[in-house]
Length: 395
Ligand SMILES: Cc1ncc(COP(=O)(O)O)c(C=O)c1O
Image (cartoon, rainbow, N blue to C red; front, side, top):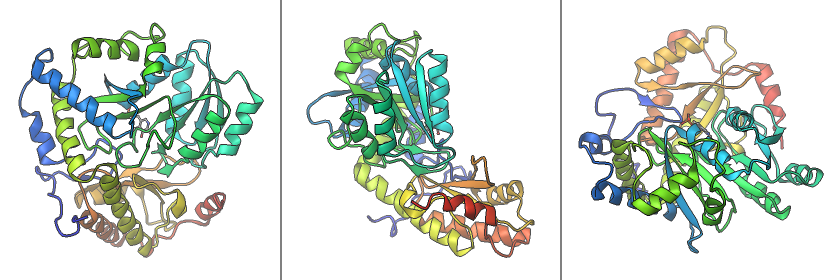
């Protein structure tokens, strides 16, 4: 990779870097792509939609042409809801593997959809494991589907989806994946990891702007979804069938967002696809985590569970540390960070995704050092309680 030699451009309007899990810092080219208008029915825009669907499918490794891609208006949660409502039959039963906010949201969505659900709840961040899934599926033959979050963005853990997929299909059940924050930077090769459907969105690892998500699913599942959805606008089969027949989105597409996304996809290809993007984010994470650890900060997760997407740090024990002050000081130095979502100990998160490289991550850690000094915090060591909590993840 050549990123070390050629730093990416800073945000063009001088706005802070978004060290967040999306919306994230996008390139000037992506934003500039939104400057012209498109007729949604026009062949030029239909061609862009076709190109986008094809490019996304190319990232899945689908050599047998078994999958198709269905873009869906709205934020990522709309696509998750569309996937659940379209692929889980009304008399199906879902095992939700929950280890954070997005797993909980899946269970909540299924409750809205009146689907029978059972949950393996691993708390704030412990990973669901293959053997637990096997045991749960053996114990309950009524379960038809399992849903897992690929990178649980609320802690930053990269869940073991391969192990889970193997367990699900060994028991003859079906897997649905929320790969919102991982797809495009963490491999999810259909030849390695079987699934029926997965979702992601425009404003994550492909580095587009927010406005739509997309569902990638087996064609036979798309066929079977006919007439199943609870919702007119979130009906994946109807969107798919209409798009294949007319080339158009069923309802008004976010035209500018789609064009920006295509620009982002081209940059993704130029960077070396999933491997290239994943390598830059991994370097971002490693540089940032090393520099933060040198200040005394500690990560919630041991290295083997850290994703290249976002990292949770414990707040320092020093009473002079106040997260709100830290946040404002970091912002004034050009970096927007993210509050933590742990329920047991105070934490915050720093994202590694978006248009930034290791130089930016080094500057962010240097800014954190200055902020600590300005707050009068000598060392960022976390409280004992945080380390006791972390010891639970000794596996
Ligand atoms: C894993 C995961 N699932 C679902 C969502 C929800 O997406 P949105 O906030 O775009 O609705 C997010 C958002 O960050 C996410 O990270």
